[in-house]
Length: 504
Image 1 (tube, rainbow, N blue to C red):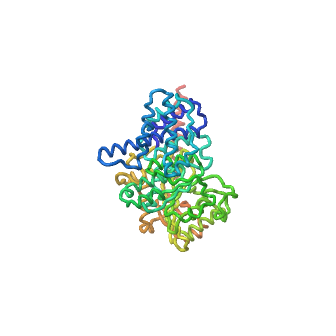
Image 2: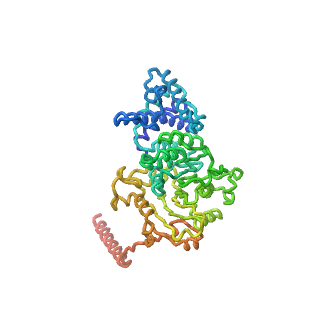
Image 3: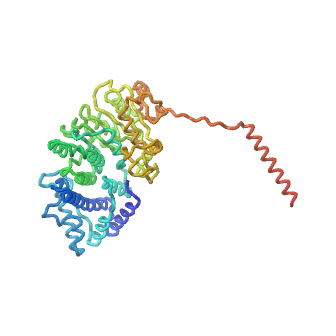
């Protein structure tokens, strides 16, 4: 989560772009991201070189972005160029260089960057902005996404397509629920800034080190896939994945709801997604395979799409607006019936209503399921109600615990008081031990519901439909006693008034 101090730094950089004549906020975001990417490439290589020099041996070649011929184009060296005019020319050369990363391999990254343009208008603006970007202090592994999330909040049109970046601790929770492996093929078909893909790569970092050479090659080539219909998102996602060691990131500029090539269907073992919550699609461009759903709502069409992307036995964990779980239209019921009767629902996890603040207050849930295409897979369905995710549920989303105690993987086990502030470790523990959940009361944070009861409820999958609330009995005083007290107070007031009148 981006800190207040970092927000202030970003605000000053944003103002510098505007003062320099860049008035389009999307252009500001893109130019900011390009310079930040150049800085991060330089720092990643410097870190790899330092480790190699310290420990002996050769640097990790996935972290080497500048050879000897192009070493002068590293961010720190560009910033050190003496005159503003020469520095401006050098940065333009450096930008052209990063656009061509992986060109020798016909990399998809080059395709995504081909339309990227260096639009900083003059040497003075470049010097001001680049100097401030050099001074940004952060250590968050997904800071590119965090910065992008904050910058999106500045757009007057942010969220008009239902796009809101998933907070990093919710991303980590979803990764923890699905437990992807190095041999899985994983996809996010609405990848945005590639937050899910980047988090998965971090989760698999140790497995990657221990993998065979063939497993590493297959993982880097096909392990993580992302689609998005926004070209700006695709460029930022590609840069994010390069930073995570994927020299040729498997990111495609693609609308997942349109007809897909056959090799993309039934191809993935794991699917993680937070698809757009709003908007509708033109039926003329919709994949005919999805047309039977009879809806234009993207949140419903994406669920149908997920089933076509997964292999048999493939598992998914996706964020949906709660309306998907109880909506009364035929399309809503058809999709829920498909999940309940023909697939395996692994869990429904209700997120707190402030999970996506300050960008939206919409109520959401995580739906976890496995594609089986076989009836009779659900005997009971497991639910969990997250009431606290470690952060305040207002627009500030301030941490309620120390940083090392947040997220689904705290550095040390949480005590009961801490778990009441951060439910995420408990969610993961209970999700992976559902055999012990069967007898829980419906007043608890988690419980199971027989599938026949869900069918009788018109396939309603909202937790509130089944959760029981215990109202505590509060003893109240007898009304006659209260009236007697009022009479006594009235008498005291009358006596006081009589005494006061006698003094006048």
